[in-house]
Figure 1 (cartoon, helix red, strand yellow):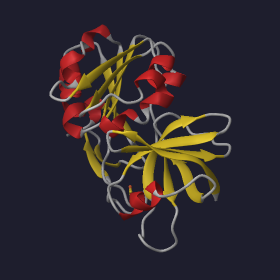
Figure 2 (tube, rainbow, N blue to C red):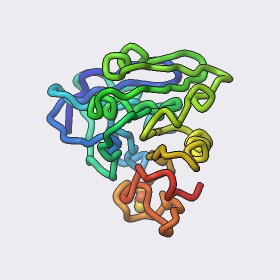
Figure 3 (cartoon, protein in one colour):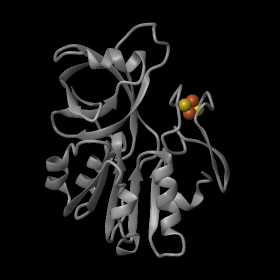
Figure 4 (cartoon, rainbow, N blue to C red):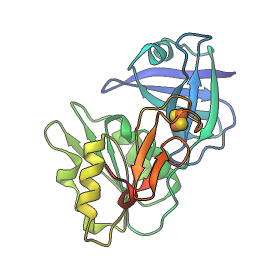
Length: 228
Ligand code: FES
């Protein structure tokens, strides 16, 4: 069990939680979070937002019973973390754009810290959040709000690599935009998960190489391999 350091609302229906401890997560991996005994049955898979010398942080949305419990945790309360799980983003070199939509911006912060000199494109419904934090670790931060989508403000051909996480239609469109260009894209799929460790098949996704488990083979895949 680990101690909560911070747990607060940051806007756009999202909460920020920081947990004290020493963690070795790689960019794009996730942990299974649990702060209850028997109900709800399943732990919640949440991607790693940041890791530093103090601990690990996550962003989450309240979508059901488990995340409702997470929302009410206070500093010094305890939480169980299992992980890190999954295959995250590969460390790439060249001109890199990080493209996040909504809660999908969560894993991209740790990516920005690891791959220096990226540009960020972040899309939100009503208000820009985490803009200052991303500015500290990116060359430039471009924000798309409301009816303007990140796909409207991004020229994919300016980049060697695009690393993205967000709503499936956004990622699918980005993959299409890179078709016929020299730009490579990695997508972090947000398929529903249950066990998080490759045992239940709830998270199966389709790829050119057959069905894969999002939790174990991904959640990050090369965009050209995914069948949306
Ligand atoms: Fe159970 Fe992926 S969540 S196999």
